[in-house]
Image (cartoon, rainbow, N blue to C red; front, side, top):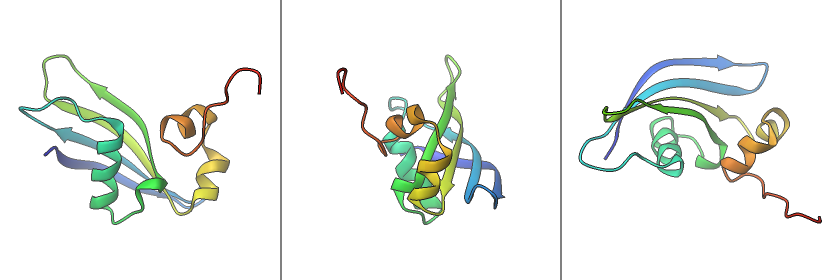
Length: 101
């Protein structure tokens, strides 16, 4: 199970979200997927996984850790308003449009 070490947490009252910078350590297992990271962050902050937006994950070669930045919104409407479409699609809040629609 990956271990989450929170580096910084800040409340962004204007955008109705909590911003988290973290390092996730893992060993003996593959790099955690975005969905697994969402689960772990939601569990640690007692939040709904649907409201967690995993923005950035950086893994350096040869290290068993991921440095990341995520946001936890107060409600889905705020996430839909402030996040770009590609982030919403990447995090499962919006469907990608098929060509011709």
